[in-house]
Amino acid sequence: MRRFKRCVVLAVFLGIFTVSSLFAAVEVTFWHGLARDPDKSSIDKIIADFEKENPNIKVKLVIVPAAETDSTKLLTAVAAGTGPDLVYIDRFTVPQRAAYDVLEPMDEYLKKNGVDIKKLMSDFYDFAVQECMFKGKYYALPFDTDVRVMLYNVAMLNSVGLKEPPKTIYDLIKVADKLTKEGKKGQYDTVGFIPWYAQGWPYTWIYAFEGNIFDEKTGKFVFATDPGVIEAYKWQKSWADRFGYEALNAFGSMQIGDLNPFTAGKLAMIVDGSWTISGIKMFAPKDFKYAISGIPTKSGKPVTWAGGWSLAIPKGAKHPVEAAKLAMYMATKGQIQYAVDTLHLPTYKKATNDLLKVDPSQKVFVDLLENAKCRPPLPVGALLWDKLNEARDNVLTGKKSVEKALMDVQIEVQREYDKIMSSK
Figure 1 (cartoon, rainbow, N blue to C red):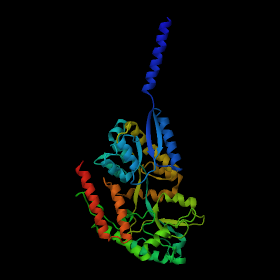
Figure 2: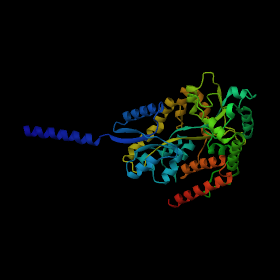
Figure 3: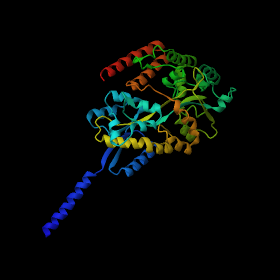
Figure 4: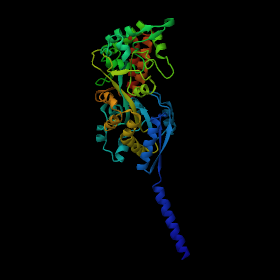
C-alpha cells in the first residue's frame, strides 16, 4: 500500500514537472536604445503589459546605444551567434540589413502567430511599410515616426515685417540676410537660418528641390546628374559662401545653459523634427514665442519626409516566433501606449486618435503623415545616407565641386548596390 502511494506521489510529481516544463516561460531578449525617460519608462510599461497577456514569454531588456547607420554591435553579435531575439533599429536601414543577411524575414513567424499580414500592414502608414520591406518580404514592423517642419521665432520675423517665413527657398535667403547680424569680434550675434543645422540633412533639400535619387525601372542611381539634386547642393554652397561655413557652424554649436541658438532667441528659423517640441516646452523661456510652417521649397509647396524606428528579428534569433509576437504587440497596442506616454508620432494609424486626445497640438504633424516622403528603401540606404552627407561636407568646405562630390558618391553606391543585387 505504501509502495502504491509512493508511486502515485511520484507520478503526480512527474506529471507536474512535465506540465511545468511544457509551459516554462521562454525568454526573449530585446535590444533597444531608449535609455532616457519618458521613452524608457514607456517601453518598460509596454513590456510589463505584454508579459501579463503572455505569461509564457518573459522579456529580457538590454539597452544598447542606437544610431541611424551604425549597427556594429548587432553585426558582431549576429556573426558570433549571440544576437538578441528582437532589436530596435532605424527603419530606413532595414533593407540594407536584410540584404546583408543580418535580419530574418518576419512573414512566416507572424503567420505562425495567426497574423493576417496584409490586414496588419494596412493599419500602418504606407511610407513606413515600404521601409520595412526587401524583395517582397517584411523584415521589420514599423514603430514610431516623425516629420520635419520649419520652426520660426515670431518676434524675430516680425522685426523685419514678416508674420511667417517665406515659402520659397530663394526668398528664404533674402529674409535670412536681413536677420543675420554680426556682434563682437566678427562673430554673429543673430542668424536668420542655417540650411544644414538640426534636420537640414541632404534629403531635406533634395526633396525641397524636387530631386530624384534612384530609378527603380533601371536599377540605377541618378542623383549625380539630376538637376534638382545639383541645385540643392549648389544652393547650400552659395549659403556657405555668403555667410561663412565655419562661422555658421560655430554659431550653430553655441549652447547657453539648456538653450540652443533657436530657443535662446538668436537663430530665427530652423528645420527640425516633431520631437523637438517637447524640448522647447521644457527648456525655452516662458516668453519665447515660436510658430510652425512648412519647409520652404523651390515650388513654394511644402514638403516633409518621415523617419523613425522599427522592430526586427536578427538572423539566428533563438526564439523568432515569440519575438514576432512581441514585435506585433509593440507595433500595435504598445505603439498606442508609447504615443500617449512620449508624444512621439505613431506609424500605427489607430494610435493617432489617442495621441491627439493627449496633445491636440500634434495635429499639425499628424496631418503631414499621409503624404510624407521617406528615404529610398534600398539595400544601400545607410551607406547612401552617410555618403550624401559626406558629399555635402566636401562641397561646403570647398574640397570638391558639387558635380564631382555627387558623382564620386554615385559611383560608390552604385557599385555596392550592383554587388548586393547580383548575389541575391
